[in-house]
Amino acid sequence: MRLIDSGTALLDLDDDGVARLRLNRPEAANGMDVPFLRALNDAVMAAHGQAGLRVLLLSGEGKHFCAGGDVKTFAGKGEQLPEYLREATAWLQLCVQGLLALQAPVIAAVHGFAAGGGGFGLVCAADLVVAGRSARFLPGATRVGMAPDAGTTVTLPQIVGVRKAMDILLTNPTLTADEALALGIVSRVVEDDQLQDAALQLARQLAAGAPKALAATKRLVWSGLGGRVEAQLPEEARTVSELSGTADAREGLAAVIERRPPRFTGR
Image (cartoon, rainbow, N blue to C red; front, top):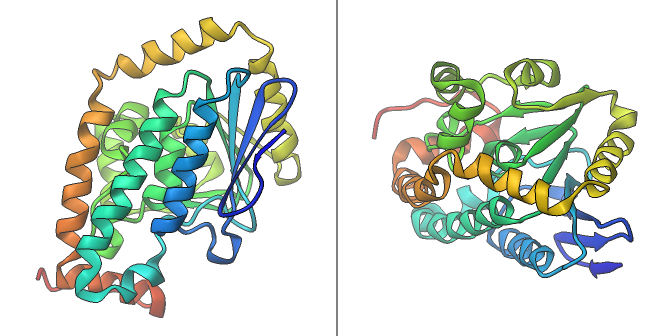
């Protein structure tokens, strides 16, 4: 059953209770701008309204899962970027909160790049992650003079430990799928041509389980973090907006677009 069949976030639900939520902005590597995030939130909320939904499978159309924020859109906002990012991060918060609060388990099927709050953050907010062998993971925020968002300042330390999370968030390595698996960011790695089948098989396995038991387990694990993920989201958003008004943030975005090393001045 097709629930949302057009736009930048597509949603359908099969007879087994597996819902497929697909990021559908392939021409921009599923980069997130405000209209995209609104559509994604609408899709997540629509998933909440489906009584027969037992598992949500999240994936991206095109060559990449999600490249994070839409850098070109951000750079084009100039001095209005802080206001724009206040709105963008507000929508991203709602999307993340919606995924965390969804009773059904969320599986992310990752190919290509999962970068920034959009890609890497959604991966960290998923309950299980299946990655293709060539997938790559990159937080990326400090590389452009900004701060992490989508709850990664809580979820990533819980997944990999504080020291490793600090290393990843401050130095921005591009992690291979196997490296992400070794760190616990990814649940399993499969060959690229097997990704969709493997993720769907896992989704159907979970969908055949006891839904109330799975929902309770998910709730207990996330609430075991003391609710700190959702509590941290507003502070992340405030910090991202504040930093986006700096000269370093403008330089960082320009450097990504121009494919050159940034020259940060601390202003």
